[in-house]
Image 1: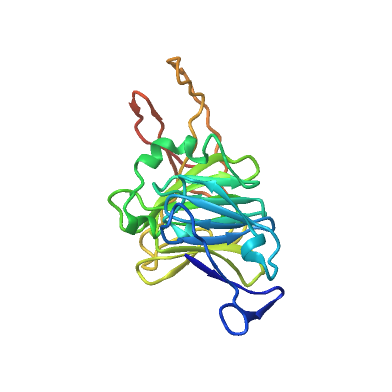
Image 2: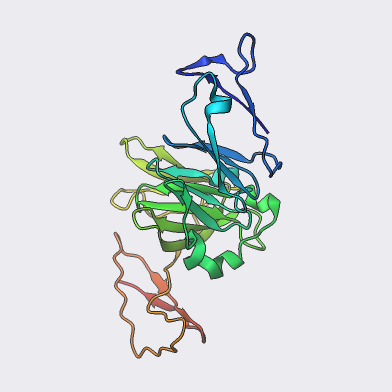
Length: 278
């Protein structure tokens, strides 16, 4: 794989155009094609399907010899270029070759891995290359979560999002309920950042804001509500002891009157659905 680059502070000069020869062939043990490149102020990350290289150093005329190459990971890379997302210039989120969430923090791969609290959900992620290619990541300004869209087995589009708190790198929720081609953050007419997604029906959907006037999300036909499904992390679990709970209290806050359906799952099965109305 070969990288060409511009002159320092001038994107109009350089590259492999005479009299410049700003070309670098990344000759490494892993000779698979590059899948994605992303940068922080400290390093350039080069992703292959099963490995990741980190390049540090100033981009000078002798960058090809002065740049320091380190194997950020010799076994973990990505097949999902749109899943690579840099947050706060210090964390690089991505889905690995099996569709599992990973993150580099300060140049090091998080250990234990980011996906550990989603291990059962990750079993259902489609590992086929065509599905992994669709996956993407984004930051939700309303919930302040980093979300990673995935295609689950049996689906042809992204249908679930694994969400994390970037402040603690803890699992926050799984969002399901609709499929989407692309998810992105846009600025609305009020100058506020909101989420929108593109759907296979040819429409773009504004997710609205919690305190805004647009909150009752509907499909274009106007006859079917977009269902939002949120799955929380496991609560009160123990990998060794068998626990039995006599009662569980849950508090929900909704911005308007709406019906909330609640179910819970244990190692012994799933409960019947309970509908809560104001």
